[in-house]
Image (tube, rainbow, N blue to C red):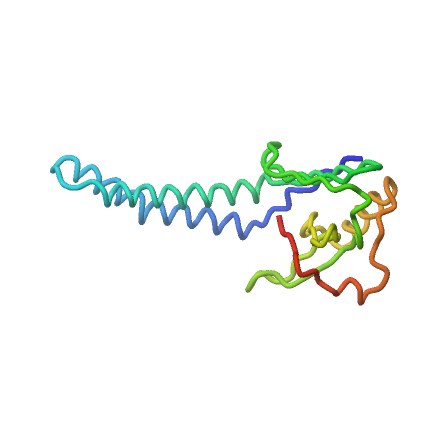
Length: 177
């Protein structure tokens, strides 16, 4: 069984990223480019201008990567009778992939947790595997997460958390990817 999830777009993130790109271009890249042209014409040192252009371009590329993730990032969850495979994709290209033997997966569950400062609550499906907590299908609604867990359990009887207290325990090694 193969299930595709996403993209789940955060429009505030998209607008913030675009605004930062415009600010970096207007306040950093354009003046540095003009300074570089002036330095070439007058024979002055080019190092500072080239460094400024490289730094601004690097930040802009980093922000563009974040925008691509936000707008075109998705997950594909593939469940077979022997293995669970989770892929992160950007525009259909595999960004990362993890494979887990079904026999090593424990406590498959929906969970919510506080995000980084100011980000509010995050949620997703988690499971424990060989001493590590793996998170996927982040920011799905609670009902969608339970539906996905149920579909996964139709292929393989993954062990699930039995009590609400058990779900609240967090693993010392939590993996977000």
